[in-house]
Amino acid sequence: MITFGEGNLRIPRFEKPVYIVAGGMTDFRKRYPEKSTEELVAEALSMAILGNELNVSIPDFKRMVNFCVYSQFADHFGDQLLAGARVHDALGFDPLGNIEVKTGGATGGHAVLAGAMAIASGYADVVPVIGWERMDEVPTKQGNSYIASAACKNFESELGWMYASYYALMAQRYLFENQVPRETLAKITVKNRRYACASPFSQNPMKLTEAEVLANDMVSDPLSFLECCVMSTGAAALVLADETTAYTLTDHPVRLTAICSGTHTLRTADRRPMEVLRLPHEPEDLYKDREWDWPGFSSFLAARMAAYLAYHMAGIHNPLEELDILETHDAFTISDIQTYEDIGLRPYGRGREFIESGEAYLGGKLPTNLSGGLLGTMHAVGATGIFQIIEIFWQLQNRWAKFHADPKIWERFGKTMPDDIENLQVRNAKRGAAISHAGTGSHVTMAILEKS
Image (tube, rainbow, N blue to C red; front, side, top):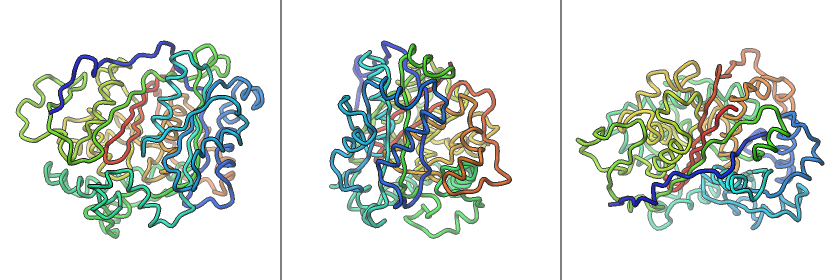
């Protein structure tokens, strides 16, 4: 059993405040043959600087940068080791220092964590964090194999070299343990893909019914194709700064009050039972009568650890009452409902209540994945965690419409804005959070943003 020492649960702190001043991205596609990786990242960074109306030109911005962080999940896809070096050179940041981060599906979140550490420590005062994935240069079957090797090759790989199979087993266990109907998972796909219809960046916007999701071809029982994210190509860029520089660059920076990380064994079979790590709002006796092992096969200790640290760091006492918007890592419908419990939106075993109550929808208590999420918009892995934080950032700036309901942005990507586009701006949003998740729950970050 894992037991924590005092140092293990020390709450992180930033020595200096960290701010987000800009975000930009490409749209996301199955294939993007007409643009190189360098062109995609340059487009994302240009949008961050110009589209967010920073008080600086691109050349002057480049002169302010001290350090860069790059985020790419797998060298295999682009067949290029040190791809970050190529990007760094192409963006004109040589000879500044940079690092490239790789932590599976949570690569984007950890890249932002690395950039925040540079700002918070005083090492740097302007840090672009830029992520991408080039998933269109290999066949889908080969791509699935690459992605699947981010789990334990001695254990999970025996399930067929496909992530859907890993999560399908968790889904079967979760549905059985908690008596959850398949319709509950279908609701998540319907919601997130519908919200993707309002995004010019989205790869898979769809207006579906639960019946259509349930009737869809099965990938791995019980998950259908519509309940699984797809491989994507695209890029996202986020600009972090210290307080003085942030207010020099923009009148509307958003504070990154916390970003924290948790991990757990790569091999799911090695996850030993332990006492439930309680979050700030959970009573001490909440799980005293539990008859099941935790975290077991259907909960994520890494997510619970990241949430525990982030809530304490940001001063969050009750996430459902104090957060206004949320982005989860909905690579599969089952991982979404698992996350509801891991971050304390409902007690363990009752995650279905969050989606079934309507609280996860626009107009509900905590609108979730209004971006369309990974199911509806993208999973260009190295860009994913950055994309999530950008969507929260724009919401807190009250700029959702500027980046989603402008016909010119849709036209930029060769699309036509729908006449019936849904306004997904959350009114008076002050705090938001984003979960970046890897593997079968091996690495997770939670970021909490607050309107300045």
